[in-house]
Length: 312
Ligand code: ASP
Image (cartoon, rainbow, N blue to C red):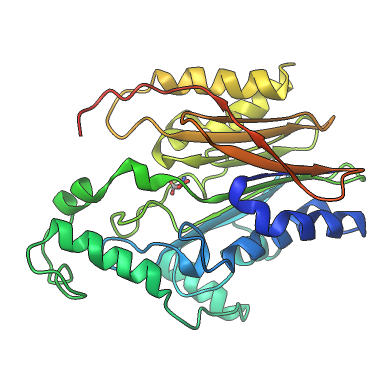
């Protein structure tokens, strides 16, 4: 058994692994790990403490995939609920659908009695206010809620340095279960309704119990366009190691054209427990814990730069 997670999964990986050891499935362990990150008030890229969209509204995305059945569930632009990953899991288990967004996702979360967010994270709110003040002349909570076009503001606000974040969890249990899960507040100051790769199965999240699992953080538009998580698992299906599979997916990303295309982070694990973590940036890490370890270990990601081809 093994759990592999993005570095911000530190707050949940040991609880998730101990759950696996006590007999909880890979799917259950991924939910446990991600819920801990969604509750981390210091993580402004996931859950209630996440950075809001350009209008100051928190829109949360999450997905989960059971690699045994390849059933999956996802929510996008969910408003006001504490654990998007659990709503996504409920979609997987209880609906004939894969992805619910916006008002429909909110409605479903209410129907299942999902826990609500009860307080605004002031640090995230202050940062939103500060950044809005940089790009509009009359800053304040209502300054950009007056019907003005948001597209120019979003282009200006879309600083890729702020994209780092989002949580990935991959788990393999001793019964052949394999699961991938992702949760995020998305790209800070995004256009309302924008979905990244996190709720897109195959983009930011994929699991197939025959081969392994993969997940991504970074500029979600890239992972959607290149189906990166699915590409990684498909490469493992064709015999590549986890390491070679992620490297291959990064080589594919380098060829994408267009702006905002230079930050990607991916992790992968194969069914033998081999794992890999790559980033286009220096200094990024990921965490893992497998049988025999008493706590998680943190490992440097292989750096595979994706050259920026646009001017800021
Ligand atoms: N991948 C996420 C998204 O595009 C953001 C991130 O990983 O920081 O919404």
